[in-house]
Length: 150
Image (cartoon, rainbow, N blue to C red; front, side, top):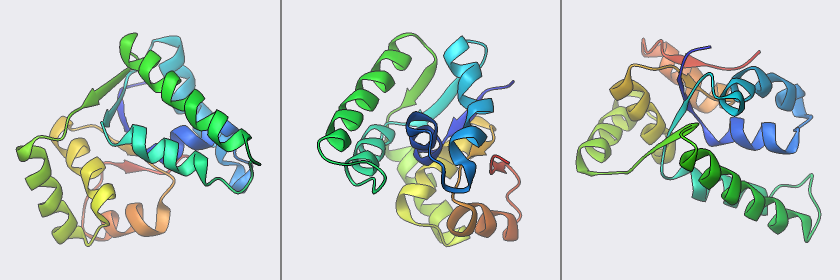
């Protein structure tokens, strides 16, 4: 397994074992090697906000489980970063400008464009479950470094 750029939705699906379209199982081949330390996930710092926000609103979880899972995810992301399993990149001006360019070129949502810009900068595949709103527009535009786990 090689390093990759991790979209927040893959981390969330793995963490909660999301059954929708079998996403929890489809995420495992990417996250298990990260846990084992044989691959690294690279991600922008916004992943913490995105993951906690997604879990706090996750319809398959009940209160107070949502907040407990969000706090657990925050701690796990911090732990993975400290262990070098996830490399977290800060959003400095050059990355933000590249993300703006990607958003305009591929008609992406702002946060998605940040992940794509990092993927482009690092020359690594972006692993995401956003087939329609992210992977498909990228492929139509000729961007090939995007993978939707199958």
